[in-house]
Amino acid sequence: MSTAEVPVSNVLTSRAVKAGLVGGVVGVYVAAIGLVQRFDGRNAITGLISLGYVLYVAIALGTGFLASRKVRTLDDPGAPTTANIFVTGAIAGAVSGLFMVPFIWVIGQFEVRETFVNVSSALHDILTFEKGTGFAAMAWPLGGLALGALGAGFHPLVPRYRRPLLAGLLVVLFLSLMEPLVRVMLSDINKNVFAQVNLDIDEGWLYESGGMTIIGAVVIFAIAVAFTFRRFQKAEARLVALGGGPAPEEAEQTPLRRKISLGLLIVGLLILPQVVGSFPSEIIGVVGLYVLLGIGLNIVVGFAGMLDLGYVAFYAVGAYSVGILTSPASPLFAPQLSFWVALPIVLVITTIAGILIGAPVLRLRGDYLAIVTLGFGEMIRVIVQSDWASPMLGGAQGLLRVPAPPFFGGELRDPQAIYYLILACVLLVAFVAYRVKSSRIGRAWNAMREDEQVAESMGISIIKTKLLAFGLGAALASFGGMIFAAKIGSLFPNTFLLIVSINVLAIIVLGGMGSIPGVVVGAFVLVGIPEVLREFGEYRLLFYGLLLMVIMILRPEGVLPDVRRKRELHEAELEDEVLLAAAAVGGGALPGGARS
Picture 1 (cartoon, one colour):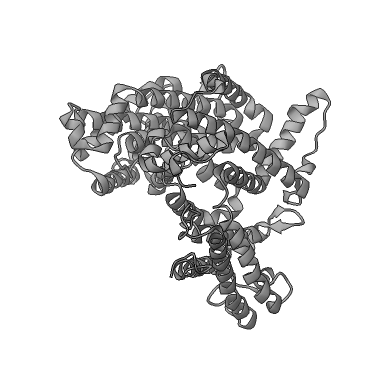
Picture 2 (cartoon, rainbow, N blue to C red; picture 1 turned 30 degrees about the horizontal axis):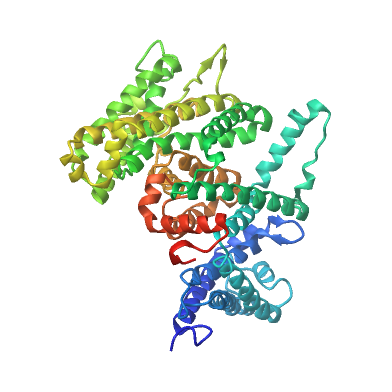
């Protein structure tokens, strides 16, 4: 029996039920660990929905979307139809909602807090919408059915409509999460900018009672959709040009527009701390430190293809080197050096450290390289903590009184002041990484990443190329270590743990291997957002894992991938996208009978 003779085949039903069960398990899990209660204390859209309910909306939408992911509408009578896509998503969503009903009944009838400490009567009220178990028994399956079908409905939409809608939803969710930061920024902008021209713009139109207002959410959603739709139209035109069609006039102006956009971005970054105030500047500064580390590790992992899990060692070497050279508490040097004099010396020290650590692992690849570099990272931390090195490094007591960088009679330690030092280093490091990526050594790294034996047969010195990657990556990491030491003023071994290396690697994976803009995006998502949402800090690693799982499944190349890496992973899909863009721009049928 073909799939054309029945509304939903057994295969699609089985897939929908399995996806629904997974969604139901996830829903029970986030309730049992207390995540729903914690998020329910914050509004997403005031008077409409809290962040706790947003979690379940996202689970139902995601369940329907993933269940119907491989169900496509093809120009084939025997293939699943659009109705099959909606039905598959609806079944998956209904099953996920139905799975919640027994859990709600159990926590309403029995006292289970001795085993599950986060399961309380307050959680039962949230899950029953304060209307009883009977109402919840109907609301959860029906709501899951509707949301699952809605999630599946994103598949039949062509990309030019699907992506703007997703962008609008994500922007509204992002701004609701960032309410503590954005509200402070808007207040400071109102005081520092609008007050100078006798304007008083109240942020109350956007936020109210810890969440976005309904009007604010609608306005932001419409702006995000319109902006993304316009950009996607331009991208379609460029894609058609790359596929062999005539280049539009706007493509000829792209270099000029890029320069103008870059200039405006730099000007905005220069005035940002004076406009937004101290608290946002502190968060942006922390993100900037991880951007420095991410760009350095991206050279080793993204460009050269060597998995390094001990990258925190170079961060520690940079921090402790500048501390030893500049701190009056260090017994090694008198008089102490200025930060600016110590900076080039530290760069040389960390470059040598990178080469020394890289030399023993030249013949290792993949998992073996990762394990050995992880060991080197832990060795550095143990040495810093040891009694043997305590006269030089302070041991467990730490290295104290690291001075701030002097600057025209002042000091760069205040968040709004040291922001400029971080920004200058980020721009410098990004420029160096960009130039190296496009150079001969960058192409050698790419060749080595693809196949070491072939690269060596083409005349590339593998030993020299690997050592250059380790040395340059270590030198760039030292910028982050030096600024961190000068910013905090004291150094302790427990600051340089393995989790730092894992965080930086996660930033690269999320943003996109080999992509410099991707590092910036990854740092803002994995470092900036948790800094704002410290009230949910205990669930930080949970969201790290979930986000990385979603990225690996839906977008393995990262959020802002390198062009070369994206082509490697999606070469066939890119050809289909060119055909779809040609049809969208031309308004005609797909050439050559291509599928939609």
